[in-house]
Image (cartoon, rainbow, N blue to C red; front, side):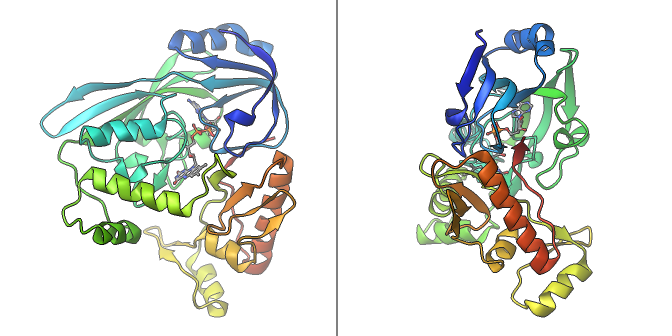
Length: 339
Ligand SMILES: Cc1cc2nc3c(=O)[nH]c(=O)nc-3n(C[C@H](O)[C@H](O)[C@H](O)COP(=O)(O)OP(=O)(O)OC[C@H]3O[C@@H](n4cnc5c(N)ncnc54)[C@H](O)[C@@H]3O)c2cc1C
């Protein structure tokens, strides 16, 4: 394994930011990541693990070691009549795992088709879309302690999954390398088409008894029609999380904006779509310099070419401030901002 110096990270982040890593390496096996942890990490002032780079914003050059995860593979580790347990190594491309499961008719992650990135990053923010989250099928993960090199199993409860949340974004942040993730999938899939757009597409295609392949195809079609492809327009998906506010806060906003969409949560709070707040604040389709908010999806901040990470970050702060000024709601970034 070679440690490279002064490498452009442009191909390694979906925003397409041309930041430079002082040091860079790729790990392809457990031995290689253990070697890095035990023999190398202490030489560097800081380090950053990356998978697909689809949920990071590099604000500047990275004056440390960037570790690109290429540990791949998918294994069936157990099965019974009803379920199959699939272990996937963390550098596997997420959508390749979804495709593998769809092909074998193992149900549970088809609604998460085409989410960019790697399997190892998926538990970080409990990825979710179209009525599903990975916590629904998550069994356990193996993580390697970045100080000691020892392995630790995290069961579902220990991961403290929430909406775009887990322990790995909080107390355990920067402490572990996620090495593999195990999912429990159904051999008799229960189709989840509560999301209106999926139903619409299935109806258009006159599919009355959808398979998980039909659901996956519908999700892919929706995503391709709504979200900018990072290969054409740099972005990291939703930049902010949908805020969860007290009921009284939502009611006050609604007095002035009766059309505000909202979702009541079991914990008594109310979720407001961040895209709606951003659109009302006038950012949808607005370009400022080399950056801006996408015309079809205001929540997605895009790089129109040659934007620096700091430019995107300053833009995001302006969006955040104007939403706070207008509605009194603070938007929290979903993207991991690397300064
Ligand atoms: C077009 C687009 C659409 C998207 N849609 C969705 C969506 O619908 N739902 C959703 O939830 N997300 C979505 N995302 C966000 C993103 O795809 C996910 O967050 C994905 O899981 C990130 O994976 P990654 O491998 O690219 O992570 P990276 O961006 O490489 O890393 C993200 C974070 O995880 C850490 N990390 C990565 N791998 C490991 C590891 N093995 N061990 C420890 N830490 C690690 C990194 O240090 C970083 O902090 C979208 C992004 C894009 C560009």
